[in-house]
Length: 459
Ligand code: ADQ
Image 1: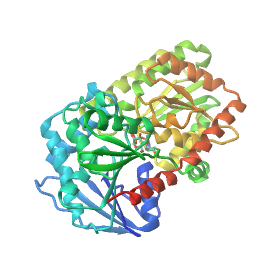
Image 2: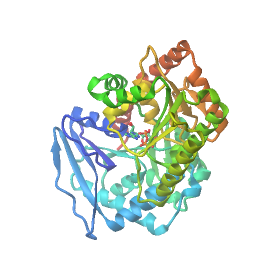
Image 3: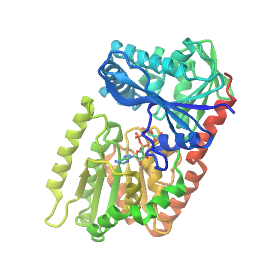
Image 4: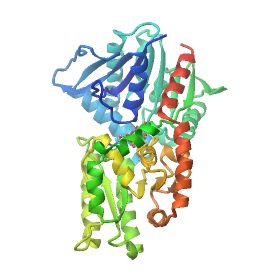
């Protein structure tokens, strides 16, 4: 059977026998552990040399990790520049926060070509290449230009925006042309796939051939919808494991019977934290009976903090948290706990299980695994309630959540009230319905379906 070669911007730092964090790492590692393979990507190191050489390969069990460093210029133009300064905001419909520079776009292409060149050196002719995410939209094009004929698939973890939004990126045509060099392009949801198809048909003069295949730029390629999931039983087992529950027990003692509303996100403007804080403020203003009875805890470790927009959102949130607590706190109650730090995954799952409400309100999100983990971590006999943004990919599947518009403060406040008052019968019913969906669309299903489609692709 052909070997699997996974390519992602970052190679997760994995150690034999230890669980990996995050859906991408968990799903990809399962696939690589089962059949062996290569994981290729950036080491996370920025080198001061203008030219970088690939690092020596490292074997962890049957997986070979291969990494390259980036030069300072690569990092600035590719990572901080086009990938996270242009693509990330536009893919999340935050065009006002995007910047564009042709020089940075050239840097993005240069790093995709650098990945391709280093990868080419270790490829075998029948390897299956599975690239991940918005950093690598140009990898297949660069590999094809180097004469590589292998099957290549891309899974996009973010949303794919409607054509009018994508076209705010001046290099949109180059970006989509490059994507068409893949054999399979996978999206989280049907609207993402439709948006891409619309672009191909209406803007690129392409053609939909049926069977989810498209013809454009002289190639035929397939698209598919593969909602990423979680290992449902493992999440619940992690949530219940006594060794993982130390912080959760401290939290429970400290709550003194108050209800906990919990949010967990990377600190990112697309996650809708500011709007969420204001919605919680609205809830407190509208619901005096909740004063002293409810605590909202937001866990949000900083991410991408060398990018200006990320530093700004952090300052803004600190100010908002202080203002809201200043307005409502009492001598024995502080309503909003804002934790600007990360938790190990093992400690996070029991915290989900303590929360009466999981509040997940991104302005846009490809999927949002926190929503799925929250549901999977609950005690089925006494489950909490998920309040979920209609603009998270997960809302397509978790229709038994309380679905809200993340821009509607009053709507979120009302949903919090409804969630906190919900009967145990209704909570159980909604939870059971969501668990069924999570089992059907598990992380195994995501990976197996994508790899099966990639194996079946032209090449
Ligand atoms: P992210 O934007 O990082 O991922 P999400 O899917 O919610 O968003 O989280 C990924 C993982 O990080 C989860 O497993 C979660 O447990 C962990 N995590 C989040 N906040 C944490 C915290 N404060 N402390 C510790 N761990 C934390 C991108 C896309 C998503 C898509 C995923 C997977 O933006 O839309 O769901 O990839 O495809």
